[in-house]
Amino acid sequence: MRELVHSLKREDFLSLGRDALTRVCEENDTLCTDERHLFIDLIASEGSPEAQAMTLEFVMKHPEATEEDMRRCLFHAIVIADPVMVKLVYYIGIAVLNVCVSKYNCQSSDCLRYHNITPM
Image 1 (cartoon, rainbow, N blue to C red):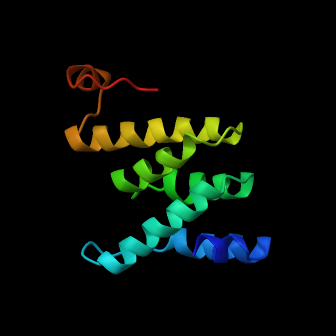
Image 2 (cartoon, rainbow, N blue to C red):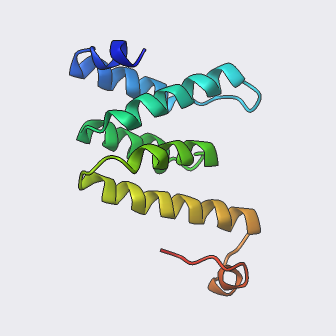
């Protein structure tokens, strides 16, 4: 599948990626979730500036991004040596902080310190 996706014309690849990453899955829709994760892996591993921008916009900046979505992005970010990834790592940190803040319902810096959460 990776070969097929990467053999697409650039515009088609970006359109397919945009469609896949903007799809919202219902809570118990495992097929949808599996497809979304597959496309996160395909797009994040592609590594081009366009693919990284899509990962940032449609996954890392998305308020409903799951821990698994972020983990998949981070897994692929490790091997990509491109300045765009600096932004990705920053947004991963922000997204993780947001998950922690919502988990503990923190509204103040005192709460963050109490739970040992360090803002970026």
